[in-house]
Image (cartoon, rainbow, N blue to C red):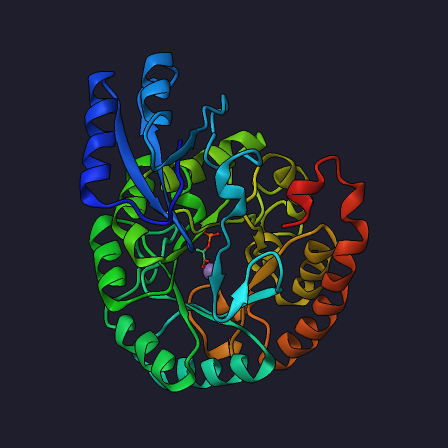
Length: 356
Ligand code: PEP
Ligand code: MN
């Protein structure tokens, strides 16, 4: 990773760097942070001569060669100083609440608009609405690009940034073009490396926040953090990790609640963690407990399916969406627990990571 002395290099300087690394069969990718642009080196970055030549340039501070499979996501990485913000909230410092429908119903747009106003009133910061849906059965509702107009209207009316999931490049291009502020990678695509790379490439210059769900079958922490590394190394450092339950192990819950992974994630990576309790437990009545537990485990935020009339919803909403009233209570109580976070962060082995 190349760390320049200034916020932005000019074209001639970038070309000079490109030429040097090219001599060693490497390439560079700019990673546009909130305050400055750094460069990932693709290829074997350990050539001593290459490092010396780059570090000899007057506009370069240093070259970091962290030996980790997820060197950009690592707590030791320069990116650990990178702040991610959305909806006026700085992740890690301010509790972030993403709320809204599992699925936007284009046949009933008014319901989504009503929910959008209600979650804003309840204190949410980002509005979620699934336009395209990954469904287990091909016969279930798959989503419809018409939903884009609905989420854009909700954004115009409420001012809330919008989050939506994409599953392929075509959807990604539509979502980016529409100006989606947060793009979700679902559990099923968490290891779709081609999509992760494409997302990094197409969203890096836009500052889009990427909510990367944890895959249902993911095991070691490293697998999750390395998936995020694909997005960051392709150009977008605004990645937020979202545990959402893994394969079911407890009768009664939709998935196996995994909010306890947060302290482990924070030992490995600087990335903020926003937990999805809705898909984890899968029933509206269990969601508040799982949500509060997630914050107690040190999460930086929550992504909660919320619907003004869950029984009229489609997708997961009839089963697992909470109502805006419950959301409001939950945000108040989650904020209280969130405030306690600083008190306990020194108990974690890596205080640098815990302070995020
Ligand atoms: C969703 O957020 O509606 C969704 C499909 O999530 P996941 O990918 O976690 O199943
Ligand atoms: Mn859902």
